[in-house]
Amino acid sequence: MSIAASLPIARTRRNLAPLCLAAATFLLLLVSGDSLLHDPDTLWQIKVGQWILDHRAVPWTDLYSLTRQGEVWLSTSWLSQVLFATAYSGWGWAGPVVLTAAAIALAMGLLLAFLQRHLDLPYALVFCLLAMTLAAPHLLARPHVLALPVMVAWSGALMAAADRGRAPSFLLLPLMALWANLHGGFVLGLALIGAIGLEALWRSPAPRLMALAMQWAAFGVGALVASCCTPYGVDTLLGAARILSLGKSFSVIAEWRPADFSSFSPFAGALLGLLGLALTRGLTLSPPRVLLILGTTWMALAHVRSIETFGVIVPLVLAQPLSGWFSPVSDAPRGLRMAPGAPAALAAVAIVLATASATSAFAARHPFEFSTVQTPVAAVDMLTERKAARIFNSYGFGGYLIVRDIKPFVDGRSELYGEKFLMDYFAAEDGRDVSGLLRMLDENRIDATLLTVDSPAAQILDHIPGWKRVYADKVAVVHVRDDQAAAPSK
Image (cartoon, rainbow, N blue to C red):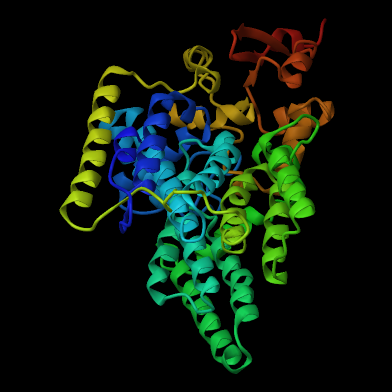
């Protein structure tokens, strides 16, 4: 950033600020790379990706679970899984860290580039910092992060078209095809066509209204077709629909829970700041833009994993209305700019090479490791020695069991298990349904349990005849059936 800041910037054309922001974001995430490896879903994502590479095919049925073996399961993130598996096989945990950091950095660079179309650099950077802060808890080595730059590019391009009162270019459709192969969140991109298209129609003069509506409708149809350009074809839409049909089970899965305002958070601060600005400065938006902000706000309130979407969409929606609202920064350019040609190209190459060099040096010396909280290594070693085959596990341990080639009772593929199963499982594991817990253990012929140390089910089994605790550490607790205790006394 200091090198870029020293470059000539007066009356120049080429903008280097997005590249500088992307490089700074990437290096920051690289240094703190272990924080990206804190989600158990990363484990099974890599496992599935390796299966796809080995078999040159995508899965259509479940291959891994104890309770859903052979049932229909479509991997709507198959391309992300392949990328993670390839990175991991080549560079160990450094591979997924670098891949994830690069995706986030690209997303931030793209967001700044779109915001700078209307805002001076300082204001655009504030919005990027806000987006990064809001997304921070969900920035993990998982498919949704690899799709993040595609979401930013797609949303920014649609918003840019609406700002000009035009229809988006059909050249954007490959982005939708890429998004649909990377992550099931592509349905958001389809929904944005209608929502942002309303803004374009609102700005359109009456004589062009019908023609513009037809152009946006044609683009929407094209995007729908592009979203089916995956190995699953039209079934891609069905796979995404299964995720959205989990109903009440959303409330018991951490990342799908509603936002919590019992303590102050960056999201609460963002909402209060947005409300304060609107009340004190009289910000006026068109009805379609208001609906966009209300819609993304409702999504973020309903599910914490949508807060990152709020952090991206709201700045893009507000950028054009705010362009004449903030007073210009005196003697400040729109960005770090250079004259076109060799100087700008050399500066860009220098930034990329410096970032690549720093990455190589750091990755060679720093041994990235997956979070031990989600890897009950010793407990699973003990279960393997006992030849336990049917294990009732805590939700967060499912991914590690899959990696160890042990079929989990449940894992992070929530759409595979469905609403009823998940609600019954969490009621049992949380200790709210003791009879349901015992019924699950008996009906599924469970011979051992692998639970977190704070699991209510683990505490309950300590007092249930027929079960005994045989292992415990800071990560997991193991119970096995105690046939002697279960046998009736003579």
